[in-house]
Amino acid sequence: MKALNQNWIIENVIDFEYKKYELLGYLQGIKQEFKDQKLYPALADLIAHYNNLVTIKSNKKQLSESFGKVLSKIDLEKLRLMYESIEKDNALIKEIENIIDFSIPQLASCLKEGKDIYNTIENNMQIEPIGLTPLNTNEGYMFISDGLQKDTFVYQYNITFIEHADERFRGIHTSYINSYAYSYINTYENIKLQLIKEIPELPNPAVFAISCQKQYPLAESFMPVAKRSLVRFVSTLS
Image (tube, rainbow, N blue to C red; front, top):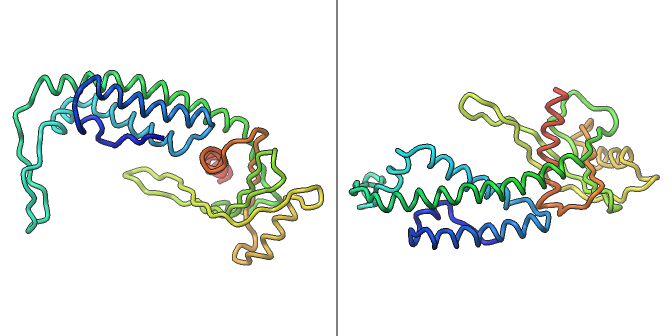
């Protein structure tokens, strides 16, 4: 996937046709990732670019402030950057606005495609508690299976709260443990018992099996969606 720098709007040549070519080349790479059913990191990168342009467009003052200054010198003694304002070039600002007006719908269309794939995976995903669920469901194990493979991939997870301004968000960290062959004999319950013996630090873990009948790229699609889905599922148990 071809990368697009965060400040691509003002880098190199600020020309509508040039930026249009640059953006469409980037989106072509994104769409190829989506065609291959690979969501991340493409989707997260796309969201960041879209939100950045929407923010700039909604705030003309931010637009002029962002593009109306140049670096003049570095004050090494105070370790800070000194800026000097330059006279605003109305033609340049207009060109940038034209680029943004073209780019936002292009990004939005591609973003919708990615979200549709995300929703399809999520809607086809099933989460099932294995055994008795303890009171603390913020740590435990995820059993990952796409329904087409015999092996079950086991990840240890830990859900934490992230403070941001006046809001609290749930975040999840996972680490790969092992893969286990699933069968009528070696059931999820048996795998859970094996984990308790192998990892005594979690004597009474919460365990959730997450499965999907269709196969998706594990690292780029299945795991990111599974992690977010598990966080939401666990929040309903609190």
